[in-house]
Length: 453
Image 1 (cartoon, rainbow, N blue to C red):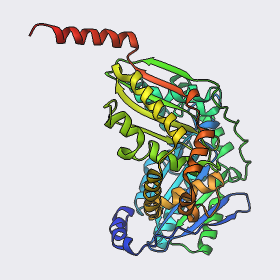
Image 2 (tube, rainbow, N blue to C red):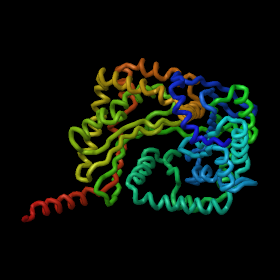
Image 3 (cartoon, helix red, strand yellow):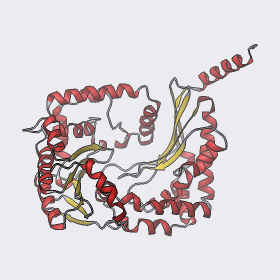
Image 4 (cartoon, rainbow, N blue to C red):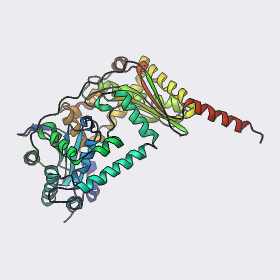
């Protein structure tokens, strides 16, 4: 009988009440050719998730911007024996789901399958074929290049995309994190299939990867499965360390002209990396600063009190090297300077005075109370396990998460923010109408308002 993953969601709803909300126990070993394996046994459903991660994100693009993203996009477009349609049908016929993607640090290849013997065997056969024998067909490559170029053209009309690219470029300078993940028109046009093959053979190797396994297979079966996965990967070598991120030396404002009624604003600095000793204090503090929606201090001051923005937020993006601390908002062009000032004042006040004990307690309750539900499904767990493996975090990371948060004091938060956040050196990117045009628009609006009715 064919049973799809989607159909099994009905079963999931029936079993959720019986799922343990205890943190999953991670088991770890390394294959003979150097592939690090992270395994969690989840017996409640006849389902298994696999995720291969590699140190192969856009930070490894070099001067071929966009090659990481294009490489993973091509993986399921053909093998030596199967074309894209046949690959899709092979997965679909047994209710399995394939996915692949990339970010700045990592690239990943995932499989979700039922653990019924026939379905699992068939899904694994196709998945391993894709990993071992991906062929990068010329026709599909040409099509994806055209799609990528259309996407890049569309981004020129997106103030959010323009702001994001300018933010990373100015924040990281010559660092690999500065490059656009999807490349530029020039670099995408220049990409060749040989570039993708070279990238894949260099970075998608055992010693540069990790395998996360979550599902209803026991340890012996997981070890056997991991051996099969490792066997289709060459041993290779671990990627070299990426350069250190330099802190900002001074404040900088970048204004980009865009014909919109609102300005998109991004403010920030390099923040934290995975495994950073200050991560939890900064994360907890930011919940009250700008990470908790309407209860956050930024939302209260910028939107509720002054009506300067519909939405305002802040968060830390932690990567292998410090990712950004990012504060974002949208506001009317005529209010952008005021909104930026208020947002910066809120951050400075938070850095100086910290959260109140009441706010800190509320943040802890919200974070720790919701955490068990964030590890209640295979999909949630595989994401965490892949992250833990990729960044080399402690195996008890999930076990100790809530107790770590609970132990953080107001003093800890204030100390971390005083040392790690530097509002006087923030980068500010504003995409919208420039000041002269805003003044002209305001003058025209006033003339219209003052005209005889």
